Length: 117
Image 1: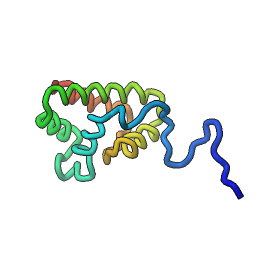
Image 2: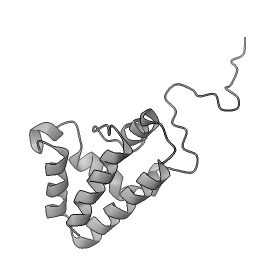
Image 3: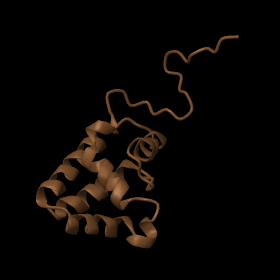
Image 4: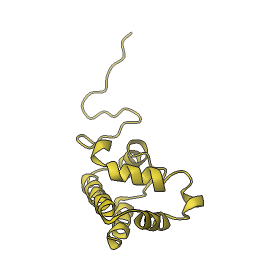
């Protein structure tokens, strides 16, 4: 018996429907998520806000600007995504342990980074 592939808009479990958006588009964001929003976030930083402050203290202005650009791009790219799609992209593709509840949380993170530029 052969397996049938999903056709049209059918989704396979574990996939994220984000054509044209890839991890390679977000190198600074991937590094930030892995380095600051990891599984020890609560123990190391205590909060997303504190992790963002730690990044801003560690990063140079060019690194902060690059992260802000990539966050802006992700906020824009995810405009039509469901909450689940956004969370899957952030956790599975960008390797974050933090799961944003909404695009608003990404925008708040962007605002934190922008204030440090």
